[in-house]
Image (cartoon, rainbow, N blue to C red; front, side, top):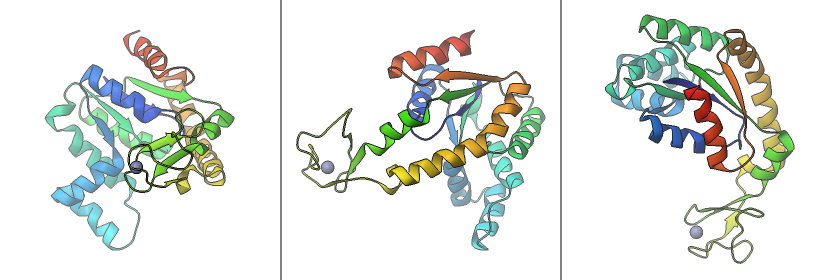
Length: 214
Ligand SMILES: [Zn+2]
């Protein structure tokens, strides 16, 4: 089961990925994480990536794809994988397709979790995080017993910069701009399936699973 999961910030992509990992016993491959790991382990591609990073340059797509390739060769990917945060552009999608075909593999499904922007704004801007222990709350859906104070440790709750309304609107705009060409790309390859990300975690999971098993 080789999957790509798409979804704007706040759509519940991470939560759904965690459930899929357990159900199908496949790893989630987040490019940020594997890039850091490759650099730390000094894999051939990690070494290349490091030279760009040390020079203050962006790591080029072909190196990122090379690192994904190194990761896919590890044993835990034999049943499949969930790609998270990659590809972000059509060029990256093409590069990925090439690498996969070289490995005799291909993407089985691209699942796009769709949630209306106003709903996402409500979800994200209501989040509060404890400065002391990092525990998360939500002013409407999971409020602390006393406003502004952590239930666990009495630490101060604050709103992360990423969760502020202006930041969130910008993140949604960037997501939309980046992702719409990708959505078209996978639609044209008949790989894209959209799932409404509204309802309980279990309901959304059920919708995804029925696509994967369909
Ligand atoms: Zn706390």
